[in-house]
Every structure is written in C-alpha cells, then in structure tokens.
Amino acid sequence: MLITGGSTGIGAATALLAAQLGYAVAINYRKNKEAAQQVVATIREGGGKAIAVQADLAMPDQIQALFQTVDKEMGTLDVLVNNAALLEPQARFNALDYERLQRIFAVNVLGVFVCSQEACARMSTSKGGRGGSIINISSMAAKLGAPFEYIDYASTKGAMDTMTIGLAKEVATEGIRVNGIRPGIIQTDIHAKGGEPDRINRVKASVPMQRGGTADEVAEAILWLASDKASYVTGSIMDVSGGR
Ligand code: NAP
Image 1 (tube, protein in one colour):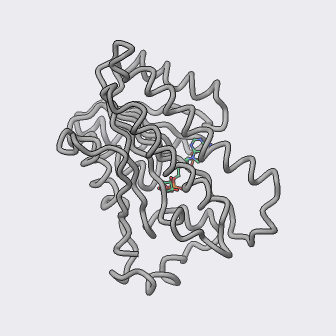
Image 2 (cartoon, rainbow, N blue to C red):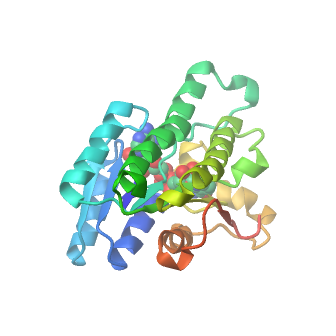
C-alpha cells in the first residue's frame, strides 16, 4: 500500500492500521522527514514492513521516482491512497492569488492524477497487472464549498470526486476499484496550516454528532474500501463526517 502524505494525521493513522492488518506500507512525505521516520519505526517495531519516500507531488518527475522506489523496495502495488493535500491559510475568494491557485491545484489535482496514472499502469489486468484499489481522500468541503475559508481547496476536492467517478468507470474491467472518502472535521494539524488550530471547537456545533472525528475513524473506512470486503464497491464516495 502506498499512502501519499503518510507522515502525519490521517495518512499516518492509515499507515499504522494497514501495517496491523498485514500490509507492507510505503509512506510518502514532502518535508516532515522526522514524522515519516517515526511512523516507519513504529511499524517496524511491531514486526511490519514499511519505508518512507520523500517526493513533492507537485513535481511529476518526483512522483515517477516515488513509484520506482516502491517497485524496487516493496514489490507489487495493491493499494494507492491519494491522501496528501495542500491547504493554505483561510482567505476570501478575491484574495486567492494566481500563484496560490497554481500551487494548490498542482498538488491536490495534478499530483493525484499523475499518482493514479502511475498506479493504473501497474495494477491494470490489461497490462499484466493483478488489479488493485485506489482511494481518494477528498473532503466534505467539496460539497460545502468552504466559503470565507478556502474555496480553492474545496474546488480541488470537487475535481477529485469527479475523477473518482470517471476513473472508476474507465478501469472497472481492468481489476481496479476507485473510491473516495470525504472526511468532515478531523483532529489533525491541517487546521493549523489553514491558520486556525482551534477550528474544530468553532465549528463542531454544526456537526450533527457535535464533535470532530479522529484520524483513526477515517483510517478504518479507508482500510475497508481497500479490502476485499468492498469487492463490489467502486465509484463510491463515502462521507466520514459525523453527519455533517
Ligand atoms: P496533514 O496532517 O496536514 O497531512 C497532509 C499531508 O500531506 C502531510 O503529510 C503533508 O506532508 C502532505 N503533503 C502536502 N503537500 C504535499 C506535497 N506537495 N507532496 C507530498 N506530500 C504533501 O492533514 P490531514 O488532515 O491528515 O489530511 C489528510 C487528507 O485528509 C488531506 O487530503 C485532507 O485534504 C483530507 N481532509 C482532512 C480533513 C481534516 O479535518 N483533517 C477534512 C477533510 C479532508 P508534509 O507535512 O511533509 O508537507
């Protein structure tokens, strides 16, 4: 299983749960090497197999190198979790400058397309692969739009949801399932990156379950979609959002 952005938050929780379930896990990170190495060390201490691979998903050549490293060190790729995403500080629509839009679409949309192309090339039964599963970590922001906060980020997740539906149909006869998850408000460091570390407390009253979720709760849904228990599920996008 390759998890992009697996050094922290939902990606790290997914890596730890995947290792417990017997997956050999490759986690990608951009800059937080220490956190990535900590996840790898925890998995290895538990007897599992894991590697950490640095790559900036805004750079297609680095994505290619990432997949080549996974080929060499881990063998056949069965699951890709497109988890990494860029979120920039909260701003109104007219303050989203062009460079910021380019940065966020490069990682959250183009990076996800290139990673998925690399995965499909390896998994497709029509190319000699043994099939596989791609799971796109979207966001409830795709439905809610994130006004006054980050319409750019929300829009990248809308693009991701559309890709999930289209790609699932395109590769359904090639042994590849493609699904998405829309987390709601989850306790990770991403809110600090958006400029409001305490965001969950401000918005939790708008969640029917009246609380933020945990990274572990999202990881459980990801591992179910990855598994054979979800063998007839493709093109689905599951909300893991406490009813929001
Ligand atoms: P997080 O802890 O900030 O994780 C984001 C990860 O993405 C980090 O590991 C980061 O690595 C990586 N990343 C960012 N830019 C990258 C790039 N250019 N190349 C490679 N990796 C890059 O946040 P999280 O909450 O766990 O987010 C995981 C996913 O859940 C994201 O797709 C996010 O949109 C989604 N989500 C989260 C929430 C929430 O409330 N937490 C809600 C809805 C959706 P570095 O730190 O090394 O840069």
